[in-house]
Image (tube, rainbow, N blue to C red; front, side, top):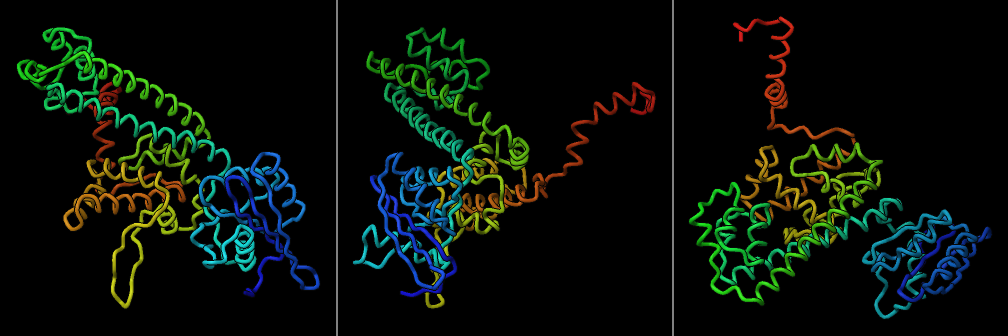
Amino acid sequence: MELPAIFQCVVGLDVHQAKISACAMIEQPDGTLTVEHREFGAFKRDRRALAEWVRTLGPDLVVMESTGIYWKSPYAALEQVGIAAWVVNARHVKNVPGRKTDVADAQWLATLARAGLLRASFIPPADIRHLRLIARQRQKLGGMLASEKNRLHKLLADAGIRLNVLVSDIHGQAGRAMVKALIEGQPIPEILDLAGRLRASREELFEALQPEQLSDAHRFVLSEIMAHIEELEARMGRFEQTLLAGLAAWEPQLVLLQTLPGVDRIGAAMLLVEIGTDMASFASAEKLASWVGICPGNNESAGKRKSGKIRKGNAWVRRLLCEFAQAASRSRCGLQEKFKALSIRKGHKKAIVALAHKMLRIIFAMLKNHTPYQDQAVDYEALLVQRNAPRWIKMLLKHGFISPAST
């Protein structure tokens, strides 16, 4: 198939675990087209040979598929020799069925790229990509921690202990101290002394801490799970510390994102390493939402609107945004009113996704314009006066601008 050429020299790379198929299309000065095929291994020396071969060609464009994670090391090798390759969505370059080979795939990539029919996926700079590893592993540890906490709940319930009925979070300071004392076999009266300022009465706590059967097997498993929980929390703390230290150069953006309700410091850091700080990479908030996969899908046929469920995208960002939306829906702000209006019509889950979409659009505007979030439902002037009025009055009294009788 002949397509009008936009680029004179392009290279298509079909990347696999054990080999890389390359196809170079070069238009000669006389208008003839030269096609050159190469195959490289997947080891470091092979990736260096690939990068050197591509560099000698001096291509206008290098494209590769984004299937799996195998594209990352060839991309880094090309980046080291000064070539910024395009990583494209595999669904956009699917070849004709029955003609699929590695060589054909590489040539098809080159053909589409030469005609300007491909779009590059967003790939952040190397320093941000490295911080992504820390942020994503921290998210994985968070999932493991939640699983272990749920398992601890189940074992306590299995033993007949109903502390979670009276304590909203048994992993708070008082709750955890009581659980650890229970595992160690301390008497119930001594455990009650660890309750601190819990709202539940001593009588209720006494009944909740009475086990039906707390065997040695229960104690062993509970102690191991508790040790694992504390180890995971310590490990997550180290990941967070390293991530925030790596983002020291982007401190203004971190502070900016924290003005949005529902976004804390670590959440802002994990979001920045996913979407970056330069919103010019996405051009518009709509394209950013489409890349994340948080916007409604388009599915219309014969004039009928069908299911508009969200498409696949960056699951890491989508999870963060839904956490932000859950927190914002419980905050006193305009986003809470938006959530209430949506939840009546669409239900809780769809309202959370819609609020996450709205928050992503707000984040795009904040990072693009370098402006903090201003909530229309909050009177910032009144908050400022409420916070500073006692100090202002004290200073006015001290310097004689007002008399004590006037206050």
